[in-house]
Length: 431
Image 1 (cartoon, one colour):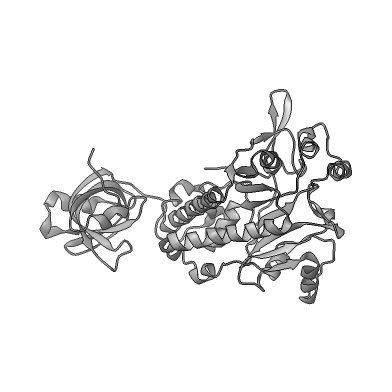
Image 2: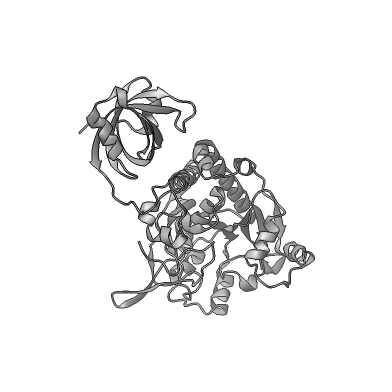
């Protein structure tokens, strides 16, 4: 095997002759010069093939190349400020691995279904590559924030015997002779872990069998779920805004080139700084009614409501203190007003909707038992969860961030399907 240099390393090899392994992203010719647009996964570079400087055999090889052909290229690294990488290669040698025939995704426009059927190839396009690089930076930043702030990563199970919010939208399977479900949240398990480790977070796949086709929904998606012992509602909100601001600013710092590739307005991201604005559910209802929307106190918000609220802010906004009637059984009531709970949804700007849902959890064992009865939950299935209030209960809070919605917002994408390598949608399980 040759000793290869990656395109991202070319800046360290200016003036030197190097080999790279790559694919042809595109090509054009101008008389006795061929211009090869090359990619290797780490970046893009132009290879300049000058007929008078190479053999006839190498010139013929260059002419034979087609879109997505694979090859080794040897060339001298030259500085070129006009190029994306800042460098180009003066080609000295070419070794073809494969000449691709009739690559299906061409520079022309293609329909969404056509591209989704060929998602395994669509990932190679500059925009899709940039999105995946940004997604990776978001993941890295999420882990960095929690690891640097005293949290311990804990992995909850994916197969569960019950649901934390009802089994209506869960995927059912058999666990030998028992019923089991693909997890919709690791939260309850994180509460148990927080009683052992103080501050914890999980990072893993979750599943919702919702028959939804909106631009915000996936069937399989990734959730980040921190849980914190001895943390109340107010501190929970402060953690969330610091966390989101940290992630966004890391992406701005480390992925500027990728953000430019996808055409994102970076100035909007640079503005994502703490503190984030807050609005209570009560005030949100009043605001929406003043905007002419037909909604009454006690009704949950839909996408149009969240969008209207978000449009009046230039950064994420918290909506707090929702009615207990349509929130999860484990949320702690406001001691001064028990018909609402100590919870918040973080709504992203620009119409991307809820990216975080969180709350202070009920820590009173008697009140939690009452909630179980009200929601007709099985105490047998949840006995381990009730034990958390029986043996050393403490005030605690947590939240869940949906990774794909966050990627969609940061990247400014129209649909969440482009935020994950191989999306699972209502009518799509291929590829």
